[in-house]
Image 1 (cartoon, helix red, strand yellow):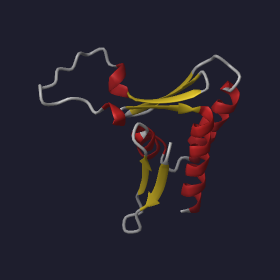
Image 2 (cartoon, rainbow, N blue to C red):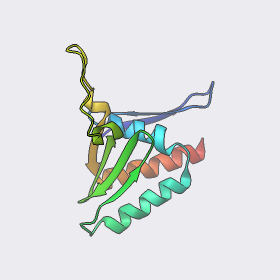
Image 3 (cartoon, rainbow, N blue to C red):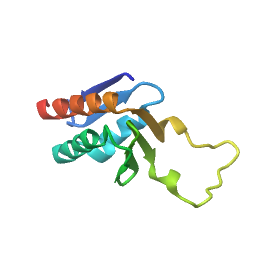
Image 4 (cartoon, rainbow, N blue to C red):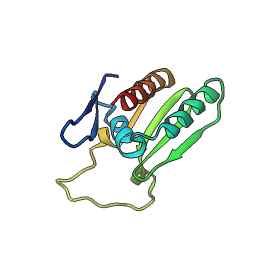
Length: 122
């Protein structure tokens, strides 16, 4: 999993660019975490607590939900949990790569620590 963090010098906005298949992690960082150091610490603490456990922990956000279980971090768009059968036109479909991403605890933890360092520094 490759990623790059950037800060726009003109407006101060943050960007997280992830490799294909992991784009939802970048969306989660920007839209749900941002510069919230308390949330980052909470998630890191949960990762530590769940490393040797079969329990699950969820953090439901406005647009995306983080699920930690079985040494994996899963980010999913909240609309995927909806029981509403959304009909799309034939030429329209959901772009799954931006709606869901999965990675191991170790990679997720390293990425989250790097994000914490980035937003603290800039």
